[in-house]
Amino acid sequence: MPDHPTLQELSAVLRHLHRALIEAESANFPGATGPFDRLVLVVEHPGFNWLHALSELIVEIDELADTGTASGQAITPCKDIIERLLGPAPALREDFRSRYLELMQTAPDVAIASGAVRRLLARL
Image (cartoon, rainbow, N blue to C red; front, side):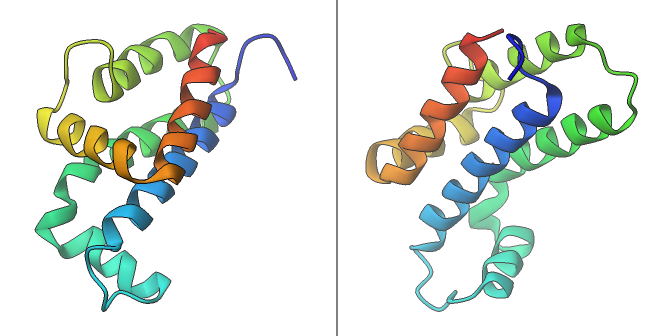
């Protein structure tokens, strides 16, 4: 593994966090028992709108990585945006930050996935 993380590594840890957040939030919807049910909730239910900020960031990182022209310098702006979403930087989206912090306190998988993101960001 290189000293500095790649955009692909960054995307992977963010996808893991995203999945943990979806699963934690889906616990509030007992009728959502399968992946399709959760997908419909994420896309259509207003209770998941806060999560779109992270979804969109992952798509942008994946697109940047897919161009093949991304250098190590492309990760720095991504780090800044992630820190504005998750903290400690001032919140980019307060709705995201407040729900994320709540779930990090109550859902162990979210806390573990957040730790993986933090460890990767520390390598930058």
